[in-house]
Length: 411
Image (cartoon, rainbow, N blue to C red; front, side, top):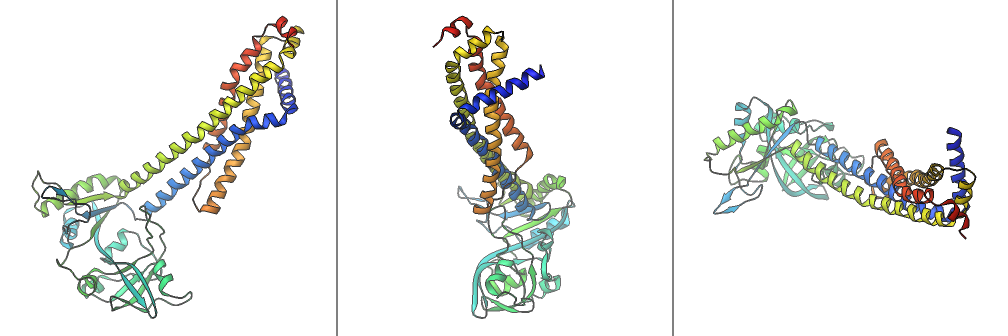
C-alpha cells in the first residue's frame, strides 16, 4: 500500500509538472490566502502584545478614579467634567480601604517649559510622591522628590525622556539644571526611564512631574484648594481589584454625600478594564482580517476544483486505459485527491514563506509589531490542506465514476 501511495504521489507530481504555468496559477489563490492569514494573524498578535505591554506600563494592579460623570439639570457630563475629587478623598481611601496598598493623586495641565533658549509645550503634572510608586516609574538618573519636598512646596521636578530630548542637547547633564515652568524656576532632580506609549496611544515620556502642592500654589492655581484631576490606588494582588473597586465606590459616595438614587460623580477604571477593552478591539480586528484572508483560501480552493475538472476532461481516455488494465475506482480517486492536496500543500508552504516575509517587512517598513506563532503557521497549512481535500473531492469522484468503455471511446 505504501509503494502504491508513493507511486501515486510521483505520478501526480509528474502530471502537474507537465503544465507548470497552469499549476502555478492554480496555486496562486492558496499562496495569497495562506500568506494573508499568516501576515494578518501576526500583525494582530503583535498588536495584542503591544497593548499588553502598554497596559503593564501603567503600573501594577492600578485603580484610576476620574472626576465627572455627573448629572446636572438632566445633562450627564463626561469624565473630568466636574471638580469632584480631592486630596482628602485619597487620604480617606487609604485610611478606610484595607485592600489598597497605596493611594495617590495627580493634576495635569499642558504648559510651556523653558530651558535657556529652548522651549517645549508639554503636560505638567502635579503629583503626590506615592503616584510614582503606584505607576511604577523608574529613573535613568537622579531620583524622586520626597514627602518633605511636597510639604514645603519645593521647586523640584522630574522630567521624561521626550521632554529631556526637546529641552537639552545630547550629552548635556540634566540633573541639577534649572528649567522654568510658567516663569517659575524648577531644579531637575530626576530623569525618568522611558515607558513608551500608553494604552490610549499618548506618549508617556512627554511629561514633567512636580510636587502637587507646588503645582497648586505656584503654577496652576486653583479655585478649589485640594481638588485633583485623578486619584490613583493600587492593590497587592490583581484578584483584589473587583472588591477594592466596590469599596472605593462606597467610600467616595459616602464622602460626597450621594443618595442611593443619585449616580456616581466619578468614574472608576482599573488596569484590567483598560486592558480588556484594548485587547477586545485588537481581537475583533484580528478575527475580521482572518476572515477576509480566508476568502482568498476559498477562492484558491475553487481554482483547484476548476483546474481538476478540466484535467478530468483532458485525461478521460487516460483514465479509461488505466481502468482497462486493472486500476480500480479508488486508485483513480486517490490519484486526483493527491493532485489536489499537492497543489494546496505546495501553495500553502509557499504562502507561509511569503506571509512570514510580509510580516517582517511590515515591521521593518511600517514599524508595526508582529509576532509569528507556530500555531498560526500550522493552522494555515492544515486549512490549505483541508481546502485541497474538500475542493478536490468532487473532481476526483467524477474521474473515479467514469465508465471505462465510454472513457476509452472519448476523443
